Length: 272
Image 1 (tube, helix red, strand yellow):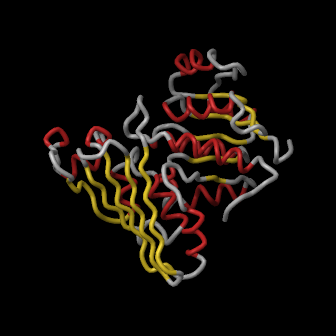
Image 2 (cartoon, one colour):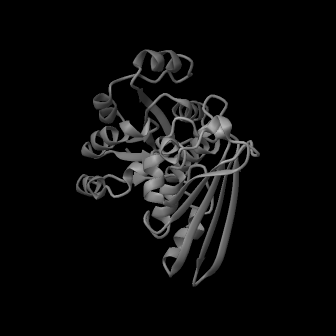
């Protein structure tokens, strides 16, 4: 099949997976066709698929990678590795939304290389990666991101237990993590996957610094990024509205995945 006409599979039927599927069904990426869905809960996925005009088949992962050109991984982070290995082993492209799992996983990049596959990491809930990627061709001296989330959006993260912070008792902005992006992705896998894309575009997950606040004064997921280097200084502020069904995830995440599908299947390429 032509590069500009891809059959897309979606692995995961949560908030983001359903939004991406609905977008493809509605023609958000005209040269991308929804060709199948897989999920840990196939019955739930079947019910969702029945609401789409294109009626995509709901299949097991091993079957999905046979019938599509690209798999959008929209599953919990602990399912990312199995999805990536199955997809890349079949020589199919992968869009990784749990980008934090890719950090320090050269084996997955090697697998993609051996099988002629491409791994795509969307911008997700942040902006400005094109500028950061451009700056990284030269010298970047520092790259920091300060994230502020309503306390409810941080519940369930492994890093909260480590921090000792009682989210129900937080009455003012409270730091729950400060350190490298590599550790942030491990401790907050559903909250700061954006830091993985940020670090890959810039100076890597050990040098990229992340600070996370549980902040009862905000009602949006806020990311304040500052980059300094030989090019000068770049400051980016993003305020994302949390998804109604999952406050840990901003609405921009699914929209970014659809925009990436639109870009890679288009005759027009804009940006770095």
